[in-house]
Length: 370
Ligand SMILES: *Cc1c(COP(=O)(O)O)cnc(C)c1O
Image (cartoon, rainbow, N blue to C red):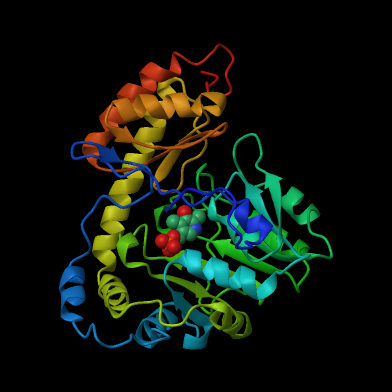
């Protein structure tokens, strides 16, 4: 086909203005892929077998993933209507934003945060409202509460924050949720909850019975700690009426039987899950400490990734990692996110990071005070 810049099909102008989705680079044979916060471990025991046993490929899956919802409901002591399962928690984010916000409405979130947030708001036809992170890369919840207007329909809080790493504390979140009007949906995106080691961190599912405030929905995923990114399973816990609205906007039958079986099998192996999460968190702490020692100003890291605030140098810094066989994720003008991967990648990350930090100009914000 010719690459005609002007085609007669009318695309919504705000959609035409979006940059097309680009995935993190795929790694070559001997490179480490540290660009998508994936889990370096194999699936938990029994998972591959469960997927292989789900052979009825000619049949549609169970549209509501009822068995998985029941299983999660028992875990959190809620009803299965208070659990919603979809093809990744990104799908649930999209459903919740579509269900609450349309043209003229506002969706508030911190920035920089998860790249999907602005895109989800725009696709819904709503207006994204970005509230800058603090100087130490944390959510500024007071500023986010102050950004709420009559038009605000949804607020997204990401803890730990992707890509910068810090958590929101339980106290901060509670005060924030108290300050937000009860008719505004608060989405607590906890994609990395399992990696958190700071006991002060918010945990939306700490109390049995689900979120205590009816306008709060908690999102979790099997993609990160459980290592099932390729099978696309995420879930939400919250008020039935809100989740019903999300179910109404979702595309039916998106969760495959293989995904549901894999998630169910994974839930049978809490001990192994906790063990590998412990290994990744320890690796992360070692990585963050080594980077700080090398002179980088690394913010608190509570997910399975670390953040280098490389600012204007981000693309150059990422290229240096790339040249050394490490695929990392640069965010131009802001920083570089490096996922915690295989053990053998740690020394390589630290080696390259130590050499590039010395190339940063004097007084660069990526440099630590040490
Ligand atoms: C990875 C991620 C998700 C979810 O990913 P899915 O694979 O769609 O479940 C959600 N939120 C954040 C902040 C993430 O980083």
